[in-house]
Length: 191
Image (cartoon, rainbow, N blue to C red; front, top):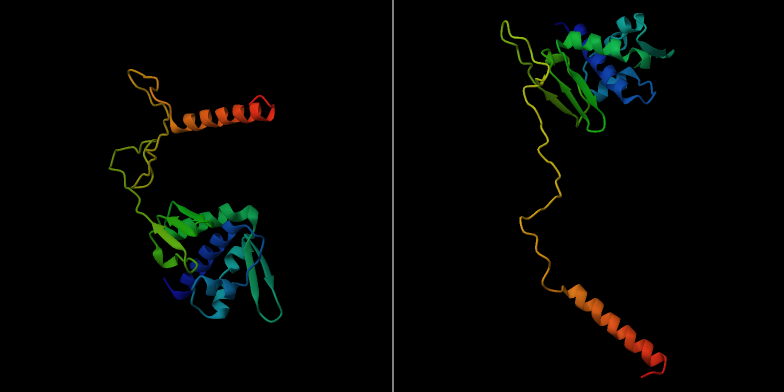
């Protein structure tokens, strides 16, 4: 892969990641390339989006001083993601902005870019044995996370026994009751 294809692919991945943020902002391409550590000449970075611009996948703004800003159109995120999945040789590319992580099964890792501090989680796809159909219940990931926690609050015993002793709270309540009766009688003049 030559440097032009690498920059084009990396910029497309960065634009898809930014498209998942859905803020409506249109980032400057040179600033976007810097945020994703994409190295290349400014002219190559600015022209790397021309293919997607021709396909009308982007909102593009060009200034007279040569700055280019671009963002995915909200109604074209699926098409752009399909292009990225094809270029990465992947079936999965999930972006989670709240956790700052990307999950993918990409085989072409040279094109995968992420912001500084983000986690890039990759996994390998399982290849089905010849003649074997994948099960609908089988996990697409080689690992499966299960929740074994089942909240059960039913505590039973074979022979439930009533409490044979009064707790300290019962004694405190009884003392307060006795004191209240004595005070009421004293105030009423009976004592």
